[in-house]
Amino acid sequence: MTAKYSKDHEWVIVENGIATIGITNHAQEQLGDVVFIELPAIGKKVAAHEQAAVVESVKAASEVYVPVSGEVVEVNKELEGDPALVNRDAESGAWFMKVKLSNPAELDELMDKPAYDKLVNG
Amino acid sequence: MKLGARMVPFAGYDMPVQYPAGIIAEHNWTRQSAGLFDVSHMGQCLLEGADFETVAKAMEALVPADVLSLKPHQQRYSQFLNEEGGTLDDLMITRHVKDGTLYVVVNAGRKEHDYGWMQKHLAEGVKLTRRDDLSLVALQGPKGEEALAKLAPAVKDIAFMHYADVEIGGISARVSRSGYTGEDGFEISVSSADASKLWDLLLSDPLVKPVGLGARDSLRLEGGLCLYGHELDEAISPVEADLVWSIQKRRRTEGGFIGAARVQKELAEGAARKRVGIKPEGRAPARDGTVVTDAAGREIGKITSGGFGPSVGGPVAMGYVDTASAAPGTKINLIVRGQPLPAEIVTLPFIPNRFKR
Image (cartoon, rainbow over all chains, first blue to last red; front, side):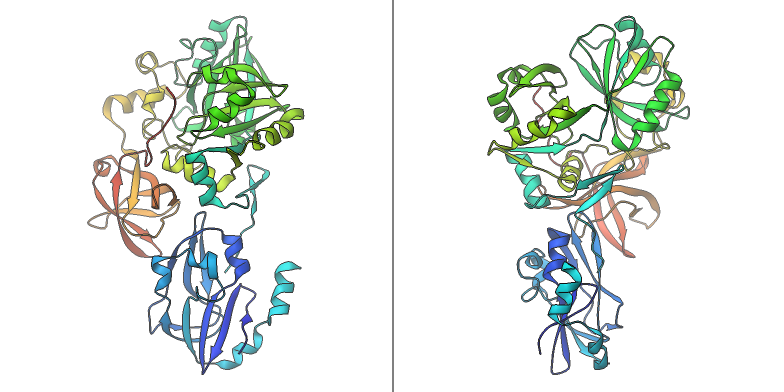
């Protein structure tokens, strides 16, 4: 499936009931240099709109919310050693976590790319 | 996630957090070459009295620094203290070449307070004049001298913590060898009418790039320098803040400034808490407000500034801890998002100051 976007600047791509989640390129541009990322534990149950990760840029810490509910089945270990990957490749290589969906209907609340672009660019 | 703005309100002004290069690039450029900072929002003013002794004595009643011993063109860092010895602001005091005149620079967010404080407490016969018609830029970094000397060769001869009146590309400027990054550099005061021309002129040199508030903060944090509202506030004394170096010997002995009782008591007996450098062991930054505990989990203080130090290549912080736990090498924990992160008390600054003495 193609990516869907939340108003909180996360993206989601679902394949076989597993959602890969990251933050948008617009979000990384606004954050600036990312220096640390805290990822959830594997097996953690998350609810939509709940905080699941933390991104620290030079200037501040920002909470990352999951746009969908489910169980964390994988996290991107590469981000721990190279948090700046988010600045280089936010919407692909710098994914944060994979979540096994418990309520796929939540995906319907998310935006497609044109709608998200309109949100951030006005 | 919630996204902050690139332009942020700072002391009532909209200021860029970063320019397109980004905080880390701006920070590193300042350490390697020369960064240009717009600090026009700071409060510049003049104090004038019948002669130098009159105005210096009037100022000494308000600050712990030795003002009387300033030579013409020389400047000192000091603080305004309240009656309880807490810090109202920190400031720079310069002996103007014109007799009976001090040039004073205070923080943007405190200037209205400070002007009122000075009006109230300065001796009669000393006149305070706000210089809101002036702008201030800082050129900081090891190549600042080279860049500025191309336009005004005389700046090479300005000693650390001194100023000279020079012309920069036809603009009359007051240039002091000072700054707040831990690097050699200059602070340049000009008429606001000339400020954007000066800014563009300095940026036309490839050695110079603009630097925003974000890198300004990471540079001064690595340099172990206090920021008002973080390391300094109305409850914190200059002894606790480890600013005893800024209180010259005569003033320590004689006192005679607002807040002297507490300062002298703490000089004699020691302060209960102390400003320290804090180095988290992992990669997670610990921000302002983070609770500090000792190895046994007892709360011993708080972080007042914390973030990522680009030159250190990892997280850095400053804060206050109980004096008993303030020795460099002391193992502590920082409570970040409910979890204790191991850290250590370290000597400040994180990056050695490279002032030109």
